[in-house]
Length: 299
Image (cartoon, rainbow, N blue to C red; front, side, top):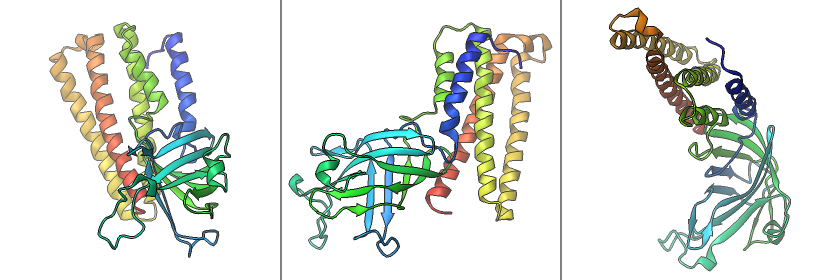
């Protein structure tokens, strides 16, 4: 790989450093904008609970003047401070045949925070709850352990959520990887020459190769105790690599008409890098979605 001009090297190194904390399995995601949170815990399993807790919300969902929202999110390493407001409009009694309350005054409103009081939780400068992140799927799936309280406007008792697991699914459109965003911004900025643009595309290709290796390794580790499945994953990866090589060879032949001089042109390199990036991204995202699904369903 040819050396990258200093100004672009600086931007890429900065992006890599920024993304390392984002990519790690035990690290907190940089943002939960648009994310879904799920808490499911039975009092029989957790002695600190007064009642079963089932909470499922998506940041930014609103209806009739009420909304689910992540009020505060401050990530740091594998931990994050968080305050969440949640509105549940379901009826507690379904026997009438109607599932949802029609009167907004009957909606049950909750806060997840570090406060034992609902009024303090929705007041000024409330203490946040803490999530310690323990697991990560392909891209969107995260799992962590809570320390904090769930308070309700209609109930006096706070539920102590210490030690309760929480599952989080990111909205990838709203929380993209900062390293990827930096690279794409450089390519789409319109300020690079063809040669400079191809340098950055080489880095983009390396980014997707690294991300693909990471998710494939995670899948192999997950199924290390099931050799039959691990072997199928390994064979599928080798098959994809063989397909990638064959396609690149045919693609190059079509572009150059077997003219070796043409292979040195920036136009040819641009098209070959685009092919490599697109195929690797597509394959990577499929495996990430698979790993997210496996983790989410406890497979």
